[in-house]
Image (tube, rainbow, N blue to C red; front, side, top):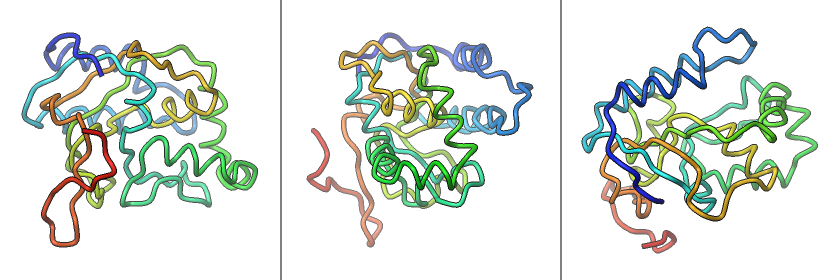
Length: 195
């Protein structure tokens, strides 16, 4: 991940609304929920940063609980998955998953060839039930862009170099690697993450 510059929240909010109109008319418009997450995330200490992300960065982003737009098969459990793990979950049972989750699947098909637009991430989970049981409590955490990140990975489009624009809230040094909480609630490195 490359840090470009510090930015103020109004710039982040404006950038979000440019690409994600809250009033967009379609059956699964979740833009208003992501906008609320941006507002929640603005309380995370460390301020906002414009960043550039590589494929490796994106694959390590932790996704919150996602029930596949009301589908029959949960895509991301309440404990969370990385983009890499969620993409593998889809790949390993693509036909069954697609049939069980038509709305989420349609979003992924639509976004596979969509232009790259900024992703919105945090270094800690926001205060919301979908994030409450995440086992990863720091690192790169999704705020908006779940379907885009998955679609771009499934289509083989994520760039290897850090050229994908994003906005990150929190201390960017924390994004160097996830910290998991164990059953005792203490945090520590698991040994699986990069330094």
